[in-house]
Image 1 (cartoon, one colour):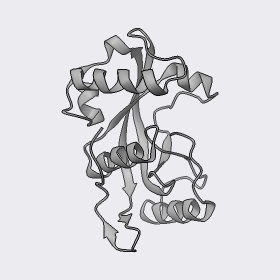
Image 2 (image 1 turned 90 degrees about the vertical axis):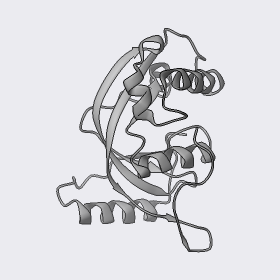
Image 3 (image 1 turned 30 degrees about the vertical axis):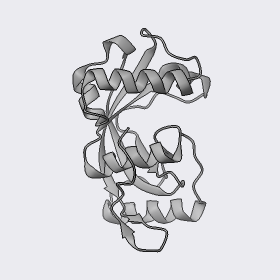
Image 4 (image 1 turned 180 degrees about the vertical axis):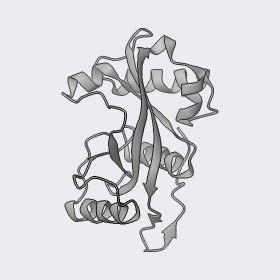
Length: 173
């Protein structure tokens, strides 16, 4: 779901609040994007980030290239959106490794925080994801960008009735 466009005012307000709490952030607002391919998946993965469980993610290099995007770099900041396109978290990339799908490590699978956090679960989840949503499908030798990050800032979920939620809607992916 990367590249979702949140409301400009929401994004500016989020960035202003984040910069108020972390004064050494740059003036320039980073790119905003959402995890996953559906709003529900974006919310599930965001909840893992906000809880501190998810400190890694993986992208198909083929998809990055097809979209004309660049591979994330260490030190890069990103604003993470929820399934409705609202800015909810600020992360900083701390490590990047590009490896074949078959060479992704158990440590990285655990950092992604999905399922039971095992390598077997990670492989099953991601093979299904890239088979369904990948630009070039799936291959065990496809190049995967394994990104590690740290959450710098996050906001509480706002339930539709205006009450504060816990951000943990739905199942984990």
